[in-house]
Length: 336
Image 1 (tube, rainbow, N blue to C red):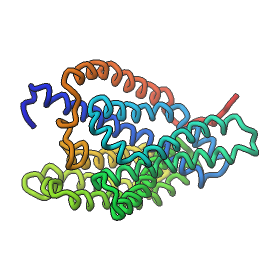
Image 2 (image 1 turned 135 degrees about the vertical axis):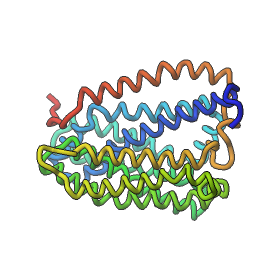
Image 3 (image 1 turned 90 degrees about the vertical axis):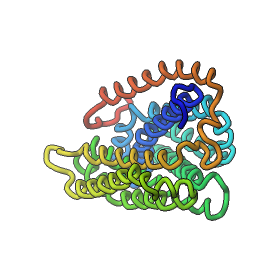
Image 4 (image 1 turned 30 degrees about the vertical axis):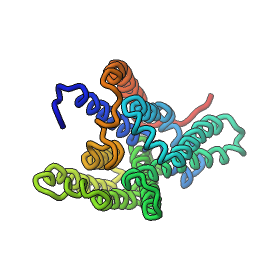
């Protein structure tokens, strides 16, 4: 790792950590509202307004973390930013189209006449689906080293479908926490069905990651490195098992343990992310470019770090405050 007192060592490490934290928070927070957007296609018309009400105070702010992550990649690792976005130009463009479509549909569905509302509900679903599939495809291509071959594209397409299912899983657990009665029961059923594909996606990535890189294979299966990795798959397995068991018993009287599936699913996402971070470190472009090679000049990073130390706490405080204010069960949606 080098001398941590050297700015050329610790500054890239700090920015990699901040960027990783931003991506993780985005995946968890925006993941559930993307999942709810996709689940709207199987909900009744009167349930869709309640589902939207559960994410209304949060959904646009959740995307702030994506902006922060991409911004940190651009200013802290400009060479990697160019390499990654060049390789993933098409899925990035599709993701942006999906995000724009979601934003437009979210507002228009509240303003149009009732006969036109189903169209904008469908467009909100479509924007959520395109965004989720694009992000999953990018994840798959990143794991494969950003090389466009038929096998890699096929793998990325599978991961795209599994990530969309994972978003629907965490979206379902959010609804279990925020909803009551029939919609809560439906959310339990949705979570059970999508959890299978979430596990498939994590298992597929776990199998593929060490096979595409001898370096990662050695980090996974040599001693004592295997001891550092072992808690992650064991912990993820325990969380999956716990989630399956609790979903079988929900809903309970007095809404007991309604928060637990969301907590367990969020931690599954965290462990999956930590596994990827452990595998690819110190590379920001897999097996091609390390965070130290891609980092901007230390003088630039120091100035950016000062700004980040103001911006990041502000976003964290705002996010925590919003979730505190709108805690508890979602209320019926009203546009009056």
